[in-house]
Length: 350
Image 1 (cartoon, one colour):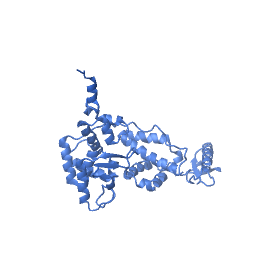
Image 2: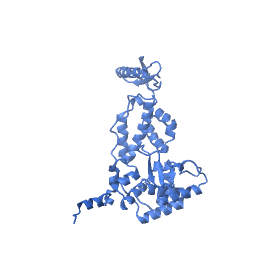
Image 3: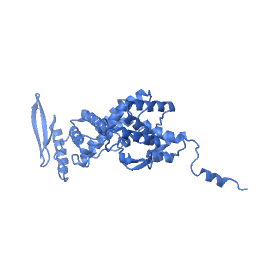
Image 4: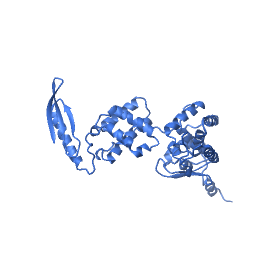
């Protein structure tokens, strides 16, 4: 049921539109014009009437704000288990600051595009802007799944920015030596993390989720159970990385399920790793070098020493060779398996 009532606010006449439907929280809004108030009330009544027919719909579906959604999502156990939860909270704080009081029923493509463009204009790189969008999209879809948001209110497509991921920065021999010395001076944990990352090409998230049961010394392999593309894989464990892992386990005061833990034995989070990494990078005097570039070092060193693009893709867990093409310039004209037999076929027989 919709009602329109006049009120006097600050010496002027306004119209308060209110919609009450059984099973849902009432929604209301103030207008300066009665016609606008009636149009809004009719629209809300029709929309909420349809939502009320959806099994399991939340009574708050018409009043939920972006702040409400953010608060609920942060408390979800699965969200709390994310390795990137600190980054998620930072991104959510940004959305709440800009649209916290906005109801989810009034939040859509226009607001999303407005915030995307504002973040880009602030100087953030496309990849960083996409992380802000991805966080809000995850919270939004969670809200739809638990019926806090209308299922028909899907997150819009074509809003993510194109990222320039063509980067293959790797360390020279002197830079590598400086990095290993700085990491060793910092801690055994960080030295092992750096060595394993370069030796195996693991992503940061894969490294931090690594468990001792995933380390196979005899088989010289690591098992990646939770990969970015949801496809478990195994990678070769070079001797240097195996030795570093053995030393870490031997010297650790607390050995739990995870390989990389903090001083209290708790799983190391990406924000903790980033803080330690920043100190090591500065100590090694590395310019324009990120943690993810350790992964590029693995691919680059393999390419320089005879690995094919297909082999590199297998190690790094690339689903498509397109992502591996950045290393192609390091192996120009390299001989691949089959070249020898091909040559024999072409040689003239006496």
